[in-house]
Amino acid sequence: MANSTKATPGYSDDKQQVIARLRRVEGQIRGLQRMVETDTYCIDVLTQVAAASKALQGVGLHLLDEHLQHCVAGAAAAGDTKRTDALVHEATKAVERMMRA
Image 1 (cartoon, helix red, strand yellow):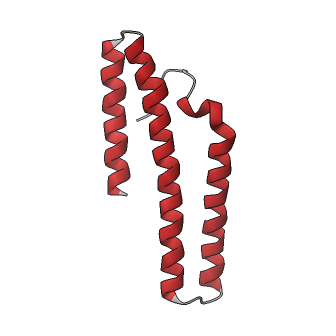
Image 2 (spheres, one colour):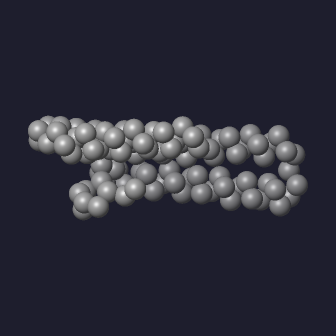
């Protein structure tokens, strides 16, 4: 469920850092493809799958932190209880999705 407002995302100040981290994950995934193409030992591939998953989780946690610090804290500071509650609920749902993945 996407938020329909056009507010600035919490990560906008470090957008280039987020993009760089995602590009590193993308490189890890390409490396995994090469490993499979070259018949690399299963455990070595699984080790790299775990590393790529951990890196992507790190990006997700960073984005969640930015959401809480920027969006949720901003709504709370403005005294917008209804919006704060909605944003906290969204964050909780995002954490649930991350934990299932």
